[in-house]
Image: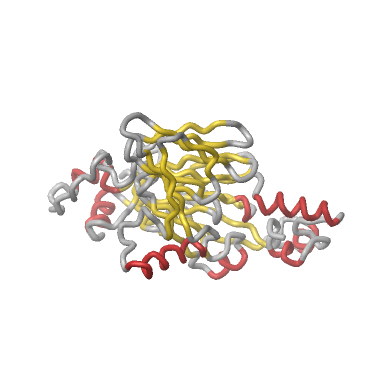
Length: 339
């Protein structure tokens, strides 16, 4: 029996198919379109052109000469950073930078920095090389960030010392875990919940990911818009409570409370499902809908969404009951985590 392979393009995955069929699919793609493959002996999705069998099959394809390598980048588009995550429940991350290296961060997240670091606040996304058009181009980029709940501005921290490493630290905004995402190893792209971004190496781009299905946008907890992180550097995102990381196999699915989703690979299909049942709907406390994630791909879930924590605090202050039961708010009926 032939080995079974899968191909992912954006949020669509194709397969199962034979290796020859996979080659035919990849040859039909534009030369620079990002795509992931999953097959025998692989523990996770990989960029198609980094899989040895695919590289050999595409060896005859001519390619454009690579652009000049920027100084200090070691051939990567993103800066290479060293980091250490400190703490258990109230974490912060220390990032060590070589001279000339830069890290970008959400404003207000900096905890401390050493004297050789220079902080700048920039409008838009400093990692985007295509942010042309002067002020209008920056405004378009900043507007996309605002749609995901982030600031119009980005803070940058650069090591301007003549020699030696300098350090900057960023603290999580509420109890939980900081998740390091190595985008180069994860296929170059991740989809995350709004407000989850903490910091990243210069070169990681922060964009938006629209939910294409109307039901997911209306009742999926995260709305129509989520964050899209692209590049080949390391990005830090924050999750509330305890973190669960899992790799879903092709066709494998999980039903999840909508507010518990932190991040997922674009190959994972995201949909919603009605809870069903009169008593479940009115008294179950979980809202009207579950999120359904279907593999293949990796997902990260959080045990304590901030909306749930804030809802319980507000309910305690009012002396009432929150969550999605009939005793809670009408908004909680639709989404068990949103007050």
